[in-house]
Image (cartoon, rainbow, N blue to C red; front, side, top):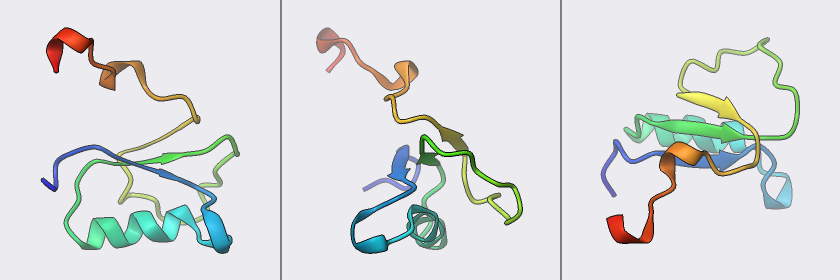
Length: 70
C-alpha cells in the first residue's frame, strides 16, 4: 500500500489494543496520513504529532467518492 494513502485507526481496538499504539507503529513504518477515530476526548498530555488528525467515528465526507469516480 502506498504510504501516502489515508489510514483511519480506531482508538479502542479488540483485545485492549490501543489505536494510538497502532498509529505510532504505522508512522514508524512510513505512513504519512494517519487519523485517529474516536468518540472520546483525547488528552493532549502525550505527543500525538505522528497523527494527521483526530476525528469522530463518522467517515469524513471529503474521502467519499461518487460511484462514477471509481
